[in-house]
Structures are given as structure tokens and as C-alpha cells.
Length: 238
Image (cartoon, rainbow, N blue to C red; front, side):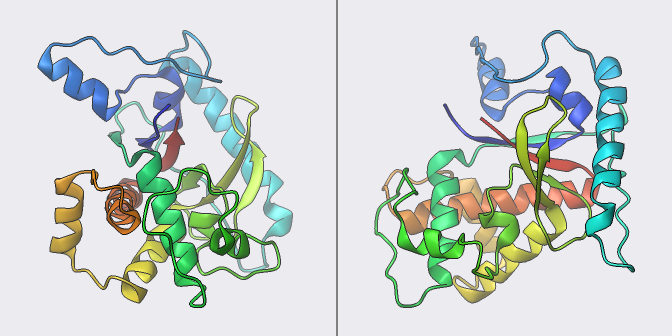
């Protein structure tokens, strides 16, 4: 099971009125590409999904009001119109996991990151340290197991149920974008042209963790930028 990123409206997402990047490539090449989805409504249109999403969004906004400071206000008013664009890309698990590890090791100078990509992160000391409840990580929107980022500015992450009743963690896509830029400033210091080259070169076949992290970083940053620029949500899809 691969890992993709979707940026768009949730109405479109749950109606499955969109294509994975691999689907687009297969269609362009004249091949069939079948996707098996989990935990999503079946046979629902955007028109049917939209009021469900709006109601869910309103309930989430009301539910977190008590957690906000007096001067904080979240609109939760991203684009759910049928005319909204969507974007997809595929960091896959190596790119995503390596990005998480790269961020975690940047917070613990006494630890040396592994040379190769790691798929099972449960035993990694740096990531375990960074995700401890008592540790104030620099990268909460990246490392706190967030699956859905919304285009609002807030510094915390919170758990709730998504529109299908599945448990999910929500964060700010503006905060995610900021954290990714901070990670680059702290480690690679790559300019926009180099980051674009990491993305255009595609995933590395070397198995090297840093190479995979660079690709994952470039995909996540590009998708976060698109979410911010177009007032859309960003969601992991697997």
C-alpha cells in the first residue's frame, strides 16, 4: 500500500472525483489502473458529500473553541466549491518516513541518523524522543502523526474523528509549511532551484535515507504551498 498526498476539497476527496498521480500516468499511457480504497463512503457525489463536510467542519470549529486563547479565532472556511482545483503527488513511505527521521535527528545532535531508509519507525530513538508528550518539538505539524492539514494558522495539533468517523489528527498547513522551511534552513540550506531539482529527479533508488528525505521534503513542501495558495486542505492518502 503506497502513500500519496491529496490537496483539494474534502467533498471531492470523499466523492473520489480525482486521480492519483499514478492513475493519471497510467491513463495517459493507455493502461488500466485499479485503486482499492479503505474507509471511504461508496457511490457518493460531490453534491451529496458537500453538506456532510460543511456540517462536520462546523462541528469541529465549535468543538475546539474552548481550547483557543481569547484573541484566537479559526474560520475553518477552506474552499469546498465544485470549481476548486485539486493536486496530488506521491512521496511514498520511504520519502515520508525518511523526512520524519531527518526532522527528528535534527533535534538530537547526540544521535547519528541511519544511512539507509527505515520503514518501521517504532524503535527509532530520535523519533521516539521527538514525539514524547513532554518534548517540545520544533516540528509538531510534521511529527505528531497528523493526517489532515487545514489552511488556518494555529500552532497546536488535535485529534478528532473525520467525516467518516475514523480517528484522525489535524494540524495547520501553514504551520507545516513553516516547519519544512525551518528544517531546510537548519540542515540543507537548499535554495528553491535545488529543491525543485530534488522533486523533478524523483525518488532515489539508492536506499539512502538523506536522498529519500530530500525527495519527501520537496513533495511535502510543494503540496503544502499549493494548499496555502489555493485555500485547500492537505491530506495523506493510503
